[in-house]
Image (cartoon, rainbow, N blue to C red):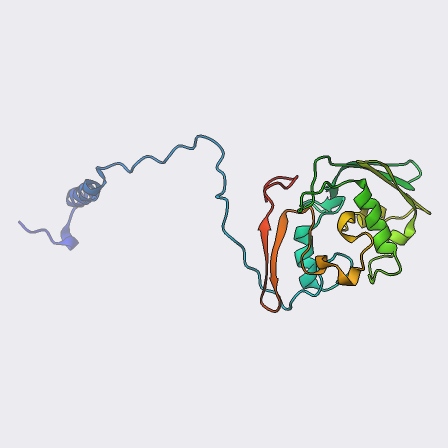
Length: 232
Protein backbone atom coordinates (compact mmCIF):
# COMPACT_ATOMS: atom_id res chain seq x y z
CA UNK A 1 0.00 0.00 0.00
CA UNK A 2 1.43 3.38 -1.03
CA UNK A 3 0.96 6.34 1.32
CA UNK A 4 1.38 9.75 -0.28
CA UNK A 5 3.12 12.46 1.74
CA UNK A 6 -0.04 14.50 1.80
CA UNK A 7 -1.87 11.67 3.50
CA UNK A 8 0.91 10.47 5.78
CA UNK A 9 -0.14 10.19 9.42
CA UNK A 10 1.88 10.67 12.59
CA UNK A 11 2.96 7.01 12.68
CA UNK A 12 4.38 6.99 9.15
CA UNK A 13 6.32 10.22 9.80
CA UNK A 14 7.80 8.72 12.97
CA UNK A 15 8.94 5.60 11.04
CA UNK A 16 10.49 7.76 8.31
CA UNK A 17 12.38 9.85 10.89
CA UNK A 18 13.59 6.68 12.64
CA UNK A 19 15.06 5.19 9.46
CA UNK A 20 16.72 8.50 8.53
CA UNK A 21 18.41 8.67 11.95
CA UNK A 22 19.49 5.04 11.72
CA UNK A 23 21.01 5.64 8.29
CA UNK A 24 22.90 8.72 9.42
CA UNK A 25 24.42 6.87 12.38
CA UNK A 26 25.76 3.93 10.36
CA UNK A 27 28.73 6.03 9.21
CA UNK A 28 29.59 7.14 12.76
CA UNK A 29 30.35 3.75 14.30
CA UNK A 30 34.11 4.46 14.37
CA UNK A 31 35.29 6.84 17.08
CA UNK A 32 37.85 9.52 16.04
CA UNK A 33 41.43 8.95 17.19
CA UNK A 34 42.14 10.46 20.61
CA UNK A 35 43.87 13.84 20.68
CA UNK A 36 47.56 13.69 21.64
CA UNK A 37 48.23 14.45 25.27
CA UNK A 38 50.61 17.29 26.10
CA UNK A 39 53.24 16.32 28.64
CA UNK A 40 54.23 19.90 29.39
CA UNK A 41 54.09 23.50 28.14
CA UNK A 42 54.33 23.66 24.37
CA UNK A 43 57.44 25.42 23.05
CA UNK A 44 57.71 27.18 19.69
CA UNK A 45 60.09 25.75 17.13
CA UNK A 46 63.45 27.56 17.09
CA UNK A 47 65.14 28.72 13.93
CA UNK A 48 64.26 30.02 10.47
CA UNK A 49 64.66 33.68 9.45
CA UNK A 50 62.81 36.96 9.23
CA UNK A 51 63.17 39.16 6.14
CA UNK A 52 62.15 42.80 6.52
CA UNK A 53 61.86 45.36 3.75
CA UNK A 54 63.22 48.89 4.17
CA UNK A 55 62.55 52.13 2.30
CA UNK A 56 66.28 52.88 2.22
CA UNK A 57 69.76 51.55 2.91
CA UNK A 58 71.58 52.13 6.19
CA UNK A 59 74.13 54.94 6.28
CA UNK A 60 76.23 54.36 9.42
CA UNK A 61 75.96 51.65 12.08
CA UNK A 62 77.58 53.49 14.99
CA UNK A 63 74.88 54.53 17.48
CA UNK A 64 74.46 58.31 17.89
CA UNK A 65 76.03 59.05 14.50
CA UNK A 66 73.30 58.08 12.05
CA UNK A 67 69.75 59.36 12.53
CA UNK A 68 67.98 57.48 9.71
CA UNK A 69 65.47 54.73 10.49
CA UNK A 70 67.25 52.04 8.47
CA UNK A 71 70.48 52.40 10.46
CA UNK A 72 68.62 52.65 13.77
CA UNK A 73 66.64 49.51 12.99
CA UNK A 74 69.88 47.54 12.75
CA UNK A 75 71.72 49.07 15.71
CA UNK A 76 68.68 48.51 17.94
CA UNK A 77 69.17 44.76 17.49
CA UNK A 78 72.96 44.83 17.89
CA UNK A 79 73.34 47.15 20.90
CA UNK A 80 71.73 47.51 24.35
CA UNK A 81 71.09 50.37 26.74
CA UNK A 82 71.31 50.29 30.52
CA UNK A 83 67.52 50.16 30.54
CA UNK A 84 64.74 49.34 28.06
CA UNK A 85 60.97 49.43 27.62
CA UNK A 86 58.96 46.33 28.44
CA UNK A 87 55.71 45.34 26.67
CA UNK A 88 53.78 47.80 28.86
CA UNK A 89 56.18 50.63 28.00
CA UNK A 90 57.56 50.68 31.52
CA UNK A 91 61.30 51.29 31.91
CA UNK A 92 62.98 48.10 33.14
CA UNK A 93 66.61 46.94 33.56
CA UNK A 94 68.71 45.79 30.61
CA UNK A 95 72.52 46.07 30.84
CA UNK A 96 71.94 47.42 34.33
CA UNK A 97 70.27 44.87 36.56
CA UNK A 98 69.05 47.62 38.92
CA UNK A 99 69.55 51.25 39.89
CA UNK A 100 69.16 53.57 42.86
CA UNK A 101 67.90 57.15 42.64
CA UNK A 102 68.85 59.60 45.38
CA UNK A 103 66.16 61.31 47.44
CA UNK A 104 66.79 64.64 45.72
CA UNK A 105 66.44 62.97 42.29
CA UNK A 106 69.82 64.23 41.12
CA UNK A 107 71.90 61.04 41.28
CA UNK A 108 71.36 57.65 39.63
CA UNK A 109 73.60 54.72 40.56
CA UNK A 110 73.47 51.85 38.06
CA UNK A 111 74.36 48.31 39.16
CA UNK A 112 75.49 46.51 36.02
CA UNK A 113 74.99 42.89 35.03
CA UNK A 114 78.03 40.70 35.48
CA UNK A 115 79.31 38.33 32.82
CA UNK A 116 77.99 40.32 29.85
CA UNK A 117 80.32 40.29 26.83
CA UNK A 118 80.62 42.26 23.66
CA UNK A 119 80.17 40.26 20.47
CA UNK A 120 83.95 40.06 20.06
CA UNK A 121 84.30 38.39 23.48
CA UNK A 122 85.53 41.40 25.48
CA UNK A 123 83.78 41.97 28.85
CA UNK A 124 81.27 44.78 29.27
CA UNK A 125 82.06 47.03 32.28
CA UNK A 126 81.22 50.40 33.80
CA UNK A 127 84.10 51.87 31.79
CA UNK A 128 81.99 51.41 28.66
CA UNK A 129 79.18 53.45 30.25
CA UNK A 130 81.52 56.29 31.16
CA UNK A 131 83.07 56.21 27.70
CA UNK A 132 79.62 56.35 26.08
CA UNK A 133 78.83 59.51 28.04
CA UNK A 134 82.14 61.09 26.99
CA UNK A 135 81.70 59.94 23.40
CA UNK A 136 78.23 61.46 23.01
CA UNK A 137 79.16 64.78 24.64
CA UNK A 138 82.46 65.13 22.77
CA UNK A 139 82.26 68.14 20.41
CA UNK A 140 84.08 66.06 17.80
CA UNK A 141 81.29 63.46 17.71
CA UNK A 142 78.81 64.52 15.01
CA UNK A 143 75.62 63.53 16.85
CA UNK A 144 72.16 65.10 17.29
CA UNK A 145 71.58 63.11 20.50
CA UNK A 146 73.83 64.89 23.01
CA UNK A 147 71.22 67.14 24.66
CA UNK A 148 70.03 64.67 27.33
CA UNK A 149 73.60 63.81 28.32
CA UNK A 150 74.62 67.47 28.56
CA UNK A 151 72.40 67.71 31.64
CA UNK A 152 74.86 65.53 33.56
CA UNK A 153 77.15 67.32 36.01
CA UNK A 154 79.37 64.33 36.78
CA UNK A 155 79.70 60.73 35.55
CA UNK A 156 81.98 58.26 37.32
CA UNK A 157 82.93 54.61 37.64
CA UNK A 158 82.63 53.40 41.23
CA UNK A 159 83.84 49.90 40.42
CA UNK A 160 83.83 47.47 37.51
CA UNK A 161 80.06 46.97 37.70
CA UNK A 162 78.83 50.23 39.24
CA UNK A 163 78.30 53.46 37.30
CA UNK A 164 76.98 56.73 38.74
CA UNK A 165 75.70 59.94 37.15
CA UNK A 166 74.79 63.18 38.92
CA UNK A 167 72.60 65.80 37.23
CA UNK A 168 72.89 69.57 37.54
CA UNK A 169 69.21 69.87 38.42
CA UNK A 170 66.16 67.57 38.46
CA UNK A 171 65.71 66.21 34.93
CA UNK A 172 62.58 64.26 34.02
CA UNK A 173 64.27 62.38 31.15
CA UNK A 174 67.30 61.31 33.19
CA UNK A 175 66.50 57.60 33.31
CA UNK A 176 64.96 57.61 29.83
CA UNK A 177 68.26 58.83 28.38
CA UNK A 178 69.95 55.60 29.45
CA UNK A 179 67.75 53.55 27.15
CA UNK A 180 70.26 54.76 24.56
CA UNK A 181 72.89 52.32 23.30
CA UNK A 182 76.15 51.74 25.16
CA UNK A 183 79.14 51.64 22.80
CA UNK A 184 82.42 49.69 23.26
CA UNK A 185 85.26 51.70 24.76
CA UNK A 186 87.90 49.23 23.60
CA UNK A 187 86.94 49.72 19.94
CA UNK A 188 86.27 53.47 19.81
CA UNK A 189 88.56 55.12 22.36
CA UNK A 190 91.31 57.17 20.71
CA UNK A 191 89.94 56.48 17.22
CA UNK A 192 88.62 58.89 14.62
CA UNK A 193 84.92 58.05 14.58
CA UNK A 194 84.62 58.76 10.85
CA UNK A 195 87.25 56.09 10.15
CA UNK A 196 85.95 53.44 12.56
CA UNK A 197 85.16 50.01 11.07
CA UNK A 198 82.14 49.93 13.42
CA UNK A 199 80.39 52.19 10.93
CA UNK A 200 79.95 49.16 8.68
CA UNK A 201 80.49 46.28 11.11
CA UNK A 202 78.94 47.03 14.50
CA UNK A 203 79.90 45.09 17.62
CA UNK A 204 77.48 45.34 20.51
CA UNK A 205 76.10 43.30 23.41
CA UNK A 206 72.63 42.86 21.93
CA UNK A 207 70.45 39.89 20.93
CA UNK A 208 71.74 39.84 17.35
CA UNK A 209 75.24 39.82 15.90
CA UNK A 210 76.14 41.60 12.69
CA UNK A 211 77.08 39.34 9.76
CA UNK A 212 77.23 41.40 6.57
CA UNK A 213 76.11 44.54 4.79
CA UNK A 214 75.82 44.60 1.01
CA UNK A 215 75.13 48.21 0.16
CA UNK A 216 71.81 48.77 -1.53
CA UNK A 217 70.85 45.11 -1.21
CA UNK A 218 70.78 43.65 2.29
CA UNK A 219 72.08 43.64 5.84
CA UNK A 220 72.27 40.28 7.62
CA UNK A 221 72.21 39.61 11.38
CA UNK A 222 72.26 36.32 13.28
CA UNK A 223 70.92 35.55 16.74
CA UNK A 224 73.29 35.73 19.68
CA UNK A 225 73.06 32.36 21.53
CA UNK A 226 74.91 33.81 24.53
CA UNK A 227 72.63 36.82 25.00
CA UNK A 228 72.31 37.66 28.70
CA UNK A 229 68.53 38.04 28.52
CA UNK A 230 67.94 34.61 26.97
CA UNK A 231 68.13 33.10 23.52
CA UNK A 232 66.56 35.46 20.95
